[in-house]
Amino acid sequence: MTEPQTQAVEPKVAYTKGDFVLFRDVERFWLGKPDHTFVGRVERSWQHADTHKVLYDLTELSSLRYRAGIDPDYMRLLPPADAMHDIDTAPLSEPDTGAMTPAAVAWLRHHLKADSSALPARP
Image 1 (cartoon, one colour):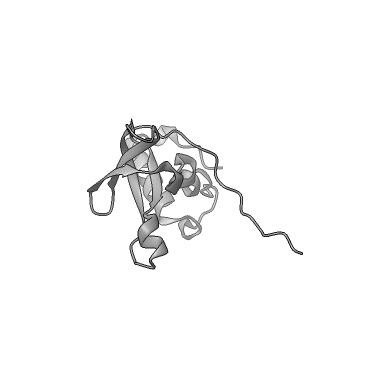
Image 2: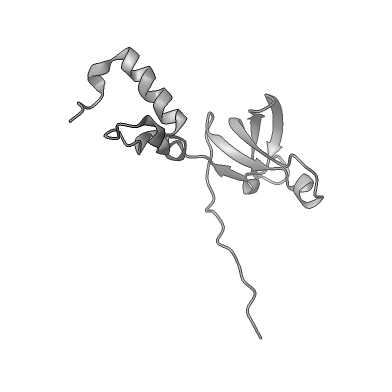
């Protein structure tokens, strides 16, 4: 008899106001309906009076729709390091900016305008 395969589950996380999260509307997901997953920003947390479970209110960023009472079991933190990875790893020594993502190029251009002394000197 073979053992059923299980997948590792993210550890429980306490989210704070302003955190960016990925949220899955589990009812829409299991019913096969579209638009079941979105990016949101945590607005507040609160404890349900009956279940004593901490729930979250989010703003769905694509529509600015307010979503109340979100179960954190269906949320995942979107870490700043992941959003900034392309900029942090941009090949600054490359002569061709085509090797960089558009976000990295935009960030560099913005900072060149603001303070060119903040960027490393080119060899």
